[in-house]
Length: 73
Image (cartoon, rainbow, N blue to C red; front, side):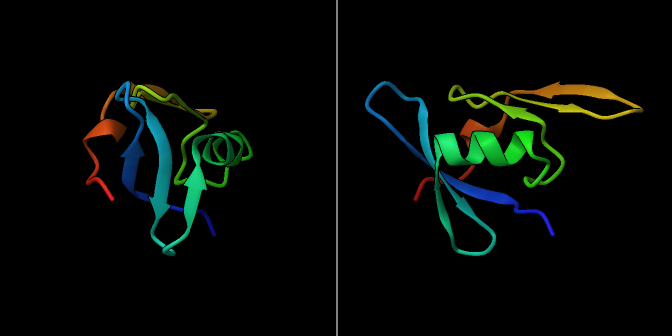
């Protein structure tokens, strides 16, 4: 079962430093980045501190820019 990212914490520069998951787990950005590469985060394959993300699978390549819009915790 994969994690869903539901909230973010940002550093002084406005970059995402931590994520809250749907399991009430706090992940550092580095931990979330590795989980995404391992296919453990809600279908994301890459994520970036500026809030952008990528989904790559056999059928599609999708990019977005909305992780920074998640609620702050």
